[in-house]
Length: 259
Image (cartoon, rainbow, N blue to C red):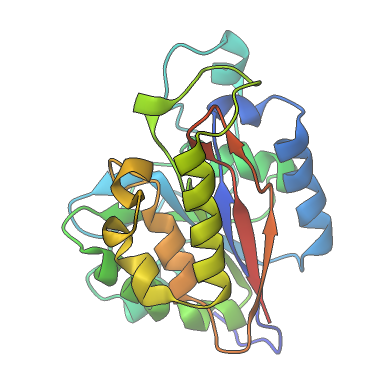
């Protein structure tokens, strides 16, 4: 990898329904617009809620596979393919930063990654790899692993996290007109406030927050937030986008951290 003068931004995406991969809506249009405002990276490293493994894994494919990791959706969604090149050199660079990381060819790009990137970079010409969520890690260990990836920001790599700040199937309403549940709206605003105040310890220990466990009954959709926060430098600014709670109990709220 090479050193650049530019420190690339890092981004957390609320990815929501897989249908956002094919529907032209406010969220997908914002992803498309966002790409036009950001420096074009030489590679992308994605942390998705949808790849959990025993240990830290990296997708080492020469060409990435499209993973359709969902069920019950229209045929058109399963026909979507996003197959950019991988980047073995980036995998090996990450292994220098995280020696326990293993290269794995069994996965590819799941919908937490490709549904977003196909709007941002439809040419599929930017190499992309994913890093998995180690199921043995505590929340603090996920955050600290994010910190270890920080040198990549100056090496032309854009790091993205994909999940949802609130992800509760139990309390969802499958309709576009559903209003946010009051507790969900409150929790979403509280998390945003803590992000702006850089109260990372509170965000790491989100299970102790009011509504924290209710918002994320399982941790995988929240954890990518911690990777992106771990990459924040002291002088970085935060910009929110797609700031909305949908289907009553899913947060699409996303943010860019940039210098």
